[in-house]
Image (cartoon, rainbow, N blue to C red; front, side, top):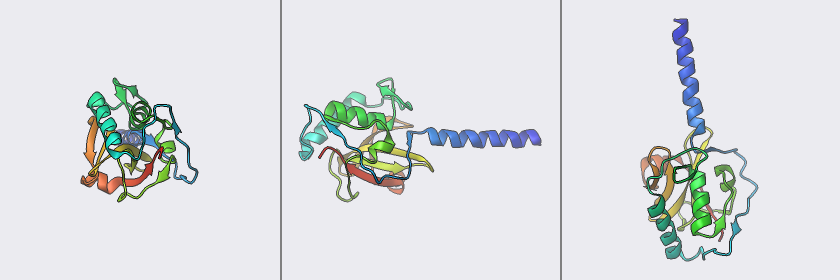
Length: 171
């Protein structure tokens, strides 16, 4: 019986640790903004069709790339790594690398006033946060822990339930 209790505690600990490891953890304080840096190849973030086109091009190139915590390549990438790479390579804007810092970047935007290129954030666990890039029509591009790089809908029950905040970057 004692062995069974120890085994159950170990399984519970593994579940907690794996939930905390998904994507990125975030501290509660988001009061201090972090600046994103425009590069010389920066595009006009107000041109929604161009932004959307660039993001969709990134999707074509990365579609199905598996999720890997800390990853930054087509062999595996995490959610904040994917937004980092996409903004740098397609939108000409350098973001911080982590979800925690990305959530402090730019300016806060209402979920009802999203534009293509806005970052959308989700609370997916007690200490776990997830980030994606808004495309328009309630769709967003992200590196999913289960499906890799995919397009999902903010209307899906899971994402609607876990929506946290949105940020406009490099505007």
